[in-house]
Image (tube, rainbow, N blue to C red; front, side):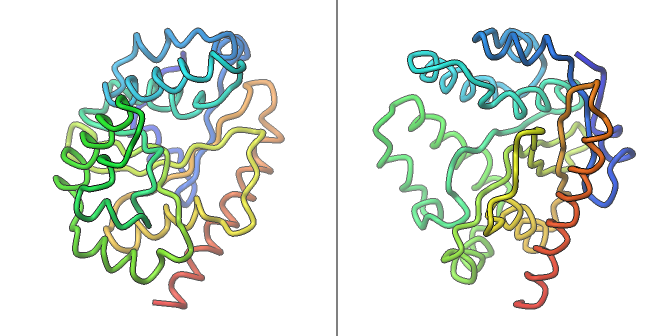
Length: 227
């Protein structure tokens, strides 16, 4: 694992985007179901719990690189993080998250517990729910997706991170980037796109990084024109 912290993320970012390399053997271990680098890291316990559960579900079907990016970034930033969450939840547009009712409708007991924890320790603690309601009213029909990681550093600064790998391409409606941009706009949080690439393919990384930045700036411009 490379050494990295949130200060590195800020200093290396180019208008909210930065690229971080990983070694091939790390992602190959992940494909085989070995998630030990995450479990041994200082990443937030919530991140470990939800990814461990999802990988256990996945192991009954196939092996893949699902959740590798989120786990990798949370792990390398673990030393400089005091709290954090990996959100698979649709809290930017599902109405139940305003009242905390959403976890009650979850059939998977592990995910229900994690949803309840996310509502109590993240949304209720740090999000103005009245503003979230306004965001939902204005943008809920677009179904924006929440960013992958929400981390709080040891100086109580909040960071929202959307993680992308080389194989990722933007969806046509930019729902992931829309969610990131809306949270920056409504809640004044620092936002980043972290692009992960194999350490021997840096040239391709730069091209894709610039495309993600272009798309993100387009989404932010679109939001500004509608508000």
